[in-house]
Image (cartoon, rainbow, N blue to C red; front, side, top):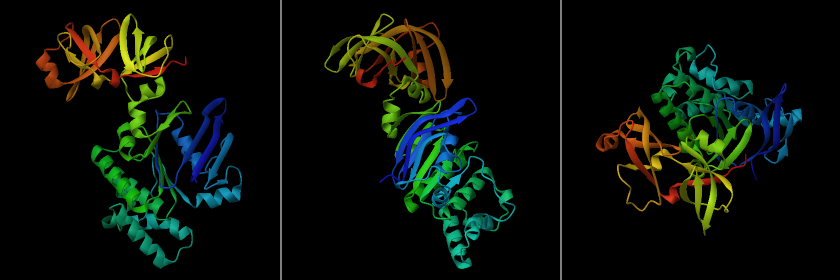
Length: 360
């Protein structure tokens, strides 16, 4: 049975719909990551899951019980959930007391408080800081204290809102290491919101893509990033080339798509005459100076109109009747002598191209 079941959730503030018809099941011990742009509704959804806010419509089931609007049931469920906010607050006291406060508020015996706080400080790698004033900690250290404070009450569900936002790369790496250790050791359900796509891929069992208050796709990280189901998801994950076209032929699962007079072949389940989007990742395009003789079924010729360095890579924009973005190493760009105005040929295998139906 799902530990969390959201049914048709909607949230409206004034005249603005923040969430629309959100449905989601999260299983016990699952790591579920919400990705989406700023303003997509991720924090609003976490606050509803934490039972801090009530949805305008829909139901929240926690461990099989509808806890949407019953105050006693909500209070009981909240004791089984911990929430780490994007900008955690620490109290003007030492690290030990910051972590212990939740247990003390619950009336835990002193010996239990000491044991649990010591255990959780060790879990997050902060045992050496137990006597430090929490207000003197760095951003990454403060976040680890907040995670420890959330874990010390032994929740069944841990909610994390952008746990590495505004942290330096070293701190981000440490927090991710801590989270991976927590997930392995505590085996609790984790629901995390992040705008860091690669972080979601590294930590999640499943990913939910939230855009404009709608949950557009829920799938494994591999499926979300290799097979986006909508144009909005493709744009969010950085597909790079999203081309409008029409299917003009089909041979089993090999379809031919007309894109502004150019043909693209791909593996897809679409019928002739359907309007589609052709999705090609820039890194799946191979550039050459002559017609490619490889096994790739697609070759596009055109002139380079823009080159942008993104060390150690180079983004190459090509105009061949439609805009095409390729990503090559700096070394390859130098060996090919790429420069603006030069004619190049880009090739891509049919199996590397994703085709989705156009709904609007």
